[in-house]
Image (cartoon, rainbow, N blue to C red; front, side, top):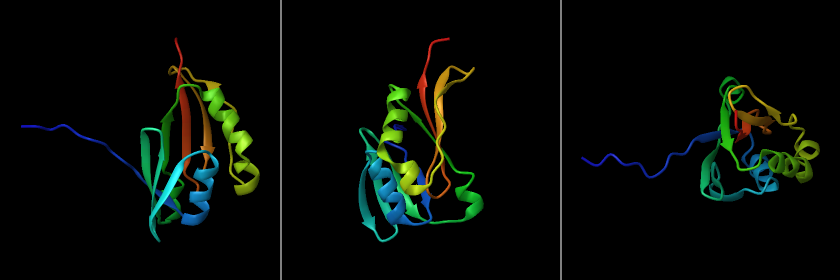
Length: 122
């Protein structure tokens, strides 16, 4: 029996697919529209599906976790991208967490919470 997996992708909700696509593009993600209601979003070898779907309770409780090599560089990229001003999103500076990660929260235009993190030594 062969139970290997090839990949796993989340369907991330988007209130407005064009706005959310523009947001992720501004951060440096490649966004390929698959249809009027779906986009394939990738950065390097990581990817997710962006779906025009909005239920407030779902979107505001949806979270994504992105592990990166250098969280401070990612934070600088977010700040330099202009997404905070352009999309009115929330981002907080990186902090060392007691569970061994340095991370920062970023909320996308739909209300999806991203935790962008880097592993740190104890």
